[in-house]
Image 1 (cartoon, rainbow, N blue to C red):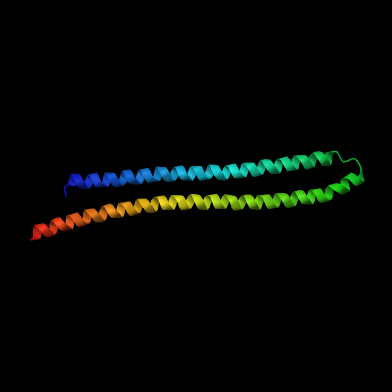
Image 2 (cartoon, rainbow, N blue to C red; image 1 turned 180 degrees about the vertical axis):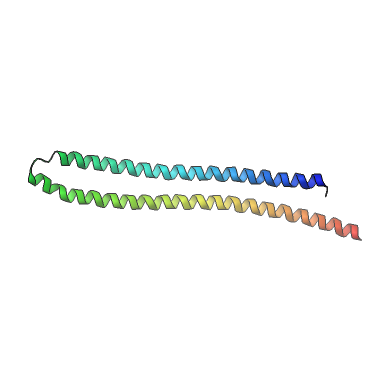
Length: 133
């Protein structure tokens, strides 16, 4: 194997690694966008619920109206906590999916690189054995 062939192989491996890194970056950005979208939707939903409650609370003019707000405020807090936990679980699921995709991408790249190097090593070994005879 000549020096030019060796350099060519390293350039090919470097190019493959760069392509994989760019794809992995794209997957990471996509996962970030999905997580951000989930968080913004949850925030928007909770702000709307809170604005509705505050609007209703500001309309209360007597003690009886204020008494009816207590169960509603507890329900709002419960719903908010449940939605935040559910959102957190969805974000974790997106993160895991993204990480699995990136891991699979790198695993396939490593497998392909290993196969290429093994083929080259076998070819060099065959040449050495042929020359030694």
